[in-house]
Image (cartoon, rainbow, N blue to C red):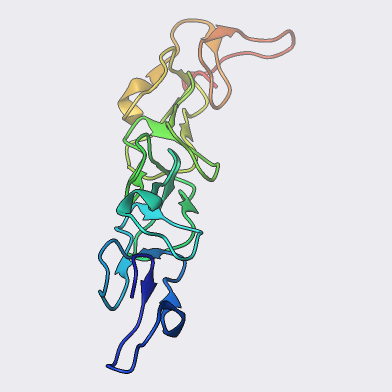
Length: 173
């Protein structure tokens, strides 16, 4: 059988007796059966492919975990992939998150929030009476108490004076 096609058995008398390689596969050697799978991290939507170069890299934000695939899958929420041609996506590191499919890079936790675990879809708010002016914080200890006659609500990036008609107690709430 010619390249891009496959066949088995001894009764092949012409190329018409051979079948095209399926999608997700290629055949770069005449007479080879079966066709070869595209590697993990790659895909191929064409039939009768004659070279490994027909297997294309998955785009950033996507992956292909099995050989011989015809499509790539978007990274799940909480995961990302910044490189092409990958078999997996990576969990967002601590201090970062994503709640979108197909993410290339995870977002930093906003000021007033933190995240101490990997693979998360959101960051944790600082408690009322505490604040965090930094982005990308990785521990609850980044949320520090407000001092004096200032206060904050949950998820605050800074403390401020109590609103008119309100006061602060020892918990700074």
